[in-house]
Length: 276
Image (cartoon, rainbow, N blue to C red; front, side, top):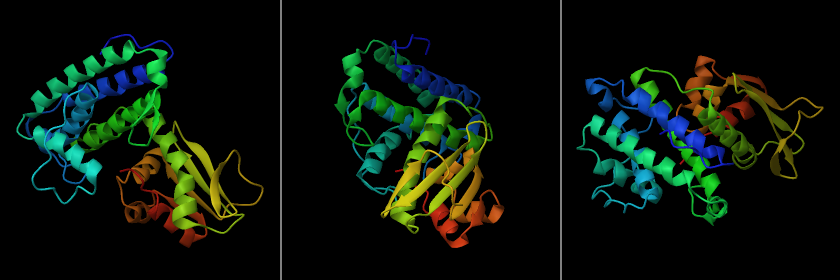
């Protein structure tokens, strides 16, 4: 985990940081904590770690394990089946064993990433978000690892790992997706805008405007008031985007405030989940 990062590729340091934070919290577990349920349907704490381990083993060149004979109800698509295969393959391995393999595997990954050439980082290929440069693919690994670290930390009641590169990457991804949420799923009138007022150390003002039936991020609030302003803290923002909390729950608890058109505001909040 202490291998030097490739020059000019900060994503290597970011991966090292989120992997080290995840290892640190998992080293604190006692007994049944490995089996606690998480916000990911059907997955325990250990299952989340097995999923992350499987992806990194795949990126090291390991063949995928056979998919389960019976697909669990929480698996929604072929990508989910692939993830489930890695999880299922570690179901009989005790949590500390999965953790030891994860620590060894991520160490190997840091070493491999640290000697990649500029051409390697620029190479375009498959990723969960489409055909992108390898560095962008690795940004999704930062995001995925950090999101599952937070799933694990919530399940065991050990908060941490916040306000760093993992959360910044998560918030950036959610911000970039809000035009799709507003424009495709809600479609407010042309000329209107939706303001997401996100508080916290990494908070931000996100303005999505509608023009000719299309939504886009605006660099600054328009002169006219938004059709609705949604106020929330940064954790609520990314948890909604990642489908980790129900819209009804955050609206009922007051964790999201709605100013302006209440109907459109509710529809936006209900439409924010986009993570596979």
